[in-house]
Image (cartoon, rainbow, N blue to C red; front, side, top):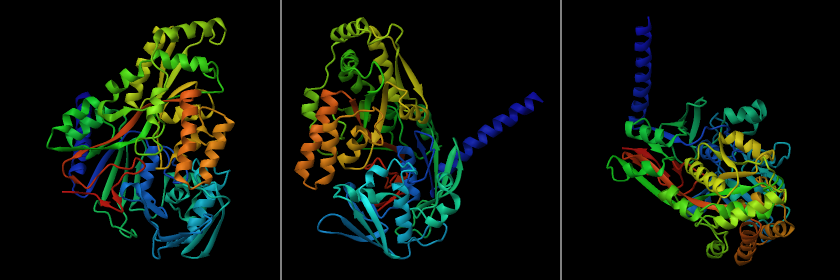
Length: 512
C-alpha cells in the first residue's frame, strides 16, 4: 500500500511538472512568474504594485502610457482642457466592450471615479484625483471633469481602469476584487489563490486582439525557484531573480535578459509617533551605524543603483548630488556614542530591541536588513530582523505598530505621486506619521501650478527637508527593471513598472 502511494505521489508531481512545461512551450501561452501573491484586482484598490500590474492586463483607462511613458489616447480617443485648467472633457470611443459583452459608456467612467472619490470606499488612489469637484455625463460618449483647483498631474489619474457600473452594483466591491470584469486585452478565467491565475485573450478588445491566447501568472516568491522554473521551461518570463542567478542567464542563447532604468525606490523608514524612532538623534545614530554605501552595491549588483533621492533617475527634479553630499555618513563610533547617550537619557529603554521589519518577498532588502542588524548590534543597539509576508506588514504599518521598516515603491511619472502621499500630513501612504507645515504647503503649492521650474523648486525643498534634515526616509537603491525570458518570447520590453507590457499602444507580445 505504501509503495502504491509513493508511485501515485511521484506520478502526480511528474504530471504537474510536465503540464507546467508543456504550457510554457505552447506558442500561444505565456507563463510568467511574479514576486508576490495577488490579493485584489479591483482597479480602485490596487495600490500594491503586484496587484496593479496584473490589473493593468484586465482593465483599460481613458488614457494610457505610450512610448517613454507619454500619455496617449486609450478608451478616450481625444480630450480637451479649458484655458483655466479646471475642465477636462473626454470623447469616449464608441463600441468599447467590457468582458461581459456590455458597452462602456460615460456613466461607467463617472461611476469609476465617484467610487474612488468616496471616502467610505477608502481607495488609496483617491489623493491622485481629489481635485475633482464634479463629473458630468454629457452624453453616452462624452464626460467632463471639473476640478476645484488646477492640479498639474491630473491627466495621469485618467489612466485608472474603468469598471462596469451595473456589474459592480450587482456583485459588490469585494467580489469585484476577486472576479474582475474590465475592458482590457485579457479577461480572468481562473484564480487558484497561491498557485496560479489564468487569463485569456479578449477577442473584442477595442484596440488590439492579443497575440497571446492565454497568460498564466504564478506567484513565485523565492528567486531561486523562479530561476529553476525558467531553466526547466516551467515559466517563460520572470521578474524576481537575484543577482547571483542573473549571471547564468546573461550569456545563455536560450534566454533574453532585458533591463531598463530604475523606476522604483527601495528605502528605509522610521515611525514619528513611536519611541525611540521619533527622536532625530536616534535616527541619525541608526544611519551612522550602517555602511549603506558599501553594502548596497554588493547586495543589489545590476539590480539597483545607490539612491540618495526618493525620486528615480527617470524623473525630475534631479537633486541627487546635493542629497548625496548631505546624507548621513557611516560613522560607527559616533553612532555608538549617540546610542550610549540615548540610553543614559532614558530615550532607549533598557529592554529595547530594535525590530527591523522587511517583506520576505524582497530578498535584497532582507539581506540589507540582516547586515544592518549586525552593524547596529556592533554599535551597541540590540536589534533583530522581523521578516514577514508583505500584506501583514503593511497592515501593521497602517496601525502604527512598526518603528523601523523597509519598503519599495513605484508609481506614475510625476513627483507628486511619489512625494505627496508619503510626506503630506494626511497622505494616504504616510506610514511614518510625519507632519510638517512647511512640507504640507510646498506639496500643495506644487499641485496648484503648471510652471515646471516652480514645481521643481518646491519638490527640491521637500526632498531636502524630509531626507537630509528630518530623516523621515533613507533612500537605499533605485530598482533596475530586469526581465528574464525564454528566447522565443518576442516584443516584451521593460519600461514602466506599473504595467506588464504584453499589450500596449506600442507592443503586442508573442512567442515564436
